[in-house]
Length: 151
Image (cartoon, rainbow, N blue to C red; front, side, top):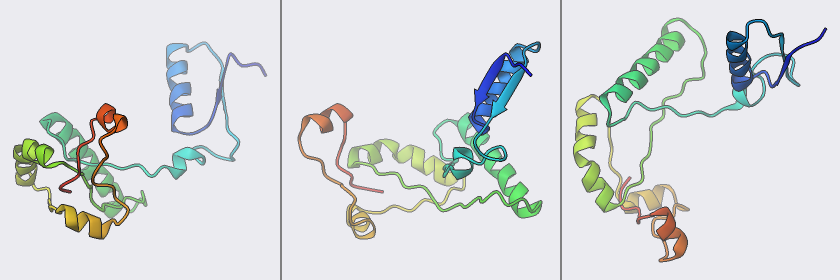
């Protein structure tokens, strides 16, 4: 059999590509091949994706929060094992960034998110290899890195 389009990879990106190509070109014959026996067994299955519902934009917050609610419903109430594991999110901030984000963090807390603040010493004790101070060098300047004071 002959095909017009070959898509290599049967994961999320491969099948999404094949779907959109077929939708735009309904007369084309498309084949998806993958080195594994079934779809989504490569990198798609091994993804350690993170998710959050902490945003400054109300729209982004609502989109993320409703998606998390749906995933939680699928797993907890319908019994689908999505391997959903809610463990928290760590932001590392300079004192300036913390002051700047103060009102946003208060708003997020009022929306029901549980926030906990860690001082620099706490962070260093919990994560001994964490770099909290940066040398005055070109890389620090280019990347705009500020010392980590709060988590």
